[in-house]
Image (cartoon, rainbow, N blue to C red; front, side):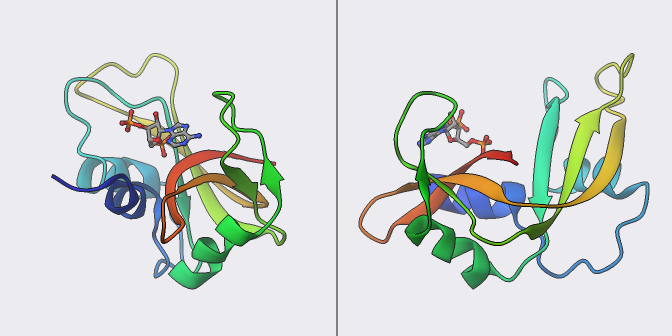
Length: 123
Ligand code: A3P
């Protein structure tokens, strides 16, 4: 079974995409997040090299949305793409709106290696 850290990489990391088209989210949600059973309402992909994301675990500590205290906010803005399910989209036809943003991101970090395990938001 994949670890939480591996799941984070496969769900949120996309460092190599330089051009994001309007069909980006529909393609990525199908290939990466394997939308099975239901359409995941929101997901964010991060277009930055992995080390840029890993160091966020050593940047500003903030409270997570779930009340835990292991979240960290990036000190610099990151190139991200927000994928949001369009209203009226019904499983199995998951139809997403693709929005490119440049924002500071918040991730949860865990364990000895201090790995990113969860995407908490962007601000
Ligand atoms: P599950 O995938 O097991 O439900 P996301 O998909 O938003 O990146 O979240 C990945 C996982 O991290 C989710 O678990 C979520 O519940 C979990 N998570 C949420 N807040 C967390 C926190 N503060 N620390 C660790 N894990 C958290």
